[in-house]
Amino acid sequence: MGVLEGITVVEIAGIGPGPFCGMLLADLGADVIAVERPAADAGRARPAQIIHRSKRSIVLDLKKPQAVDVVLRLVARSDALIEGMRPGAMERLGLGPDVCLARRPSLVYGRMTGWGQHGPMAQAAGHDSNYTGLSGALWYASPAGQPPQAPATVIGDIGGGALYLALGILAGILRARGDGRGQVVDAAIVDGSAHMLNLLLSMVASRGGGFERGQLSLDAAHWAGRSYRCSDGSWINIAPLEPQFYAELLTRLGLGHDERFVKGQMDPRAWPSLTDELTALFATQTRAQWCELLEGTDACFAPVLSPAQAAVHPHMAERKVYQTVDGMLQAAAAPRFSATPAGELAGVPLRGAHTQEVLSELQLSAQDVAKLQASGALGPLGQA
Image 1 (spheres, one colour):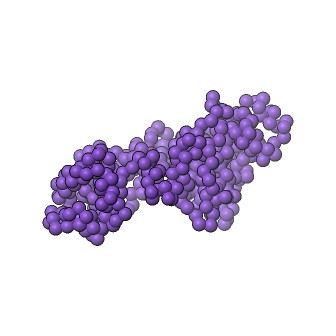
Image 2 (cartoon, one colour):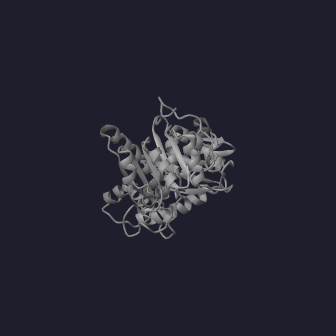
Image 3 (cartoon, one colour):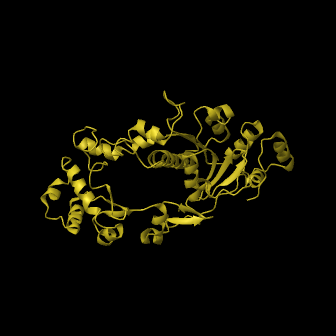
């Protein structure tokens, strides 16, 4: 059971943000049928491929017309489709939006790309940091004078890509249930990651413009919002931006009467020296000691943890944010719903595990299935 129970999504399996979007929808209860390519790992366990969890898997060779017909049969009974190929690839396969919407007028056709479906770079290869670099989203990722770097895949593939595609698909389904009309969702990482800048852009606008790094209280140059190394080599993070939280931190650190800190919170000219002093201060004790002093207070403090450490932190453990499935540590479904909570995490299916099951639901006869096998369009008839 989940909030999206009753929604069926066809995912043309790929890599990165498209399958992540499918995982998110499956986590929340949608029936996501991943159409995967024939591969040598059919029949083998693949628990590390977490983004395929909770889905059903069928194997089809989409270069075969007979396989394309099976996908169209799936489309005819589905709410949405996800694809992440280069622009034009689905059209060449005979599975473009016009064909699919003709088969299912209410279909929401979700397209996941880096550059978008049109524009001078639409056909170019790229990855997360290329898209966020072009969109402006990478600009504030590091202090001035240092190479702009951000956590791999988080800002682009996931934040600007998969999550915007999921929102677009669900919004499209909501609209289609009202008027019966489907549509195409063009989810480009350059669009989504640029859109995520609007909070920072509002801050830039409020101070009269100018995009120099090292000037905003929310960019990576501000000393409050940085991570600091402790004496044991571990890291902590502080971010007390509001005056009352800032005062709390200074009091707990014994700096409440230090005029340099009291007056320097929002003065970019003071940030380098304050950063140096805090770097030296936090290096005098272990992370555990700083946690004892600051964790759970209004100083806006947290330890910087690896996923394995985060999984056993008391707060994260109580909320069961991380779970282990088939020996693999992974984050649980999010967000949470009071009336329709997500079920237990399901493991990653074998490639093609549900081929027979899905074909039966499409009411294909044994003769039809035999023809598909003979044509080479069909993968192994695995059992769920």
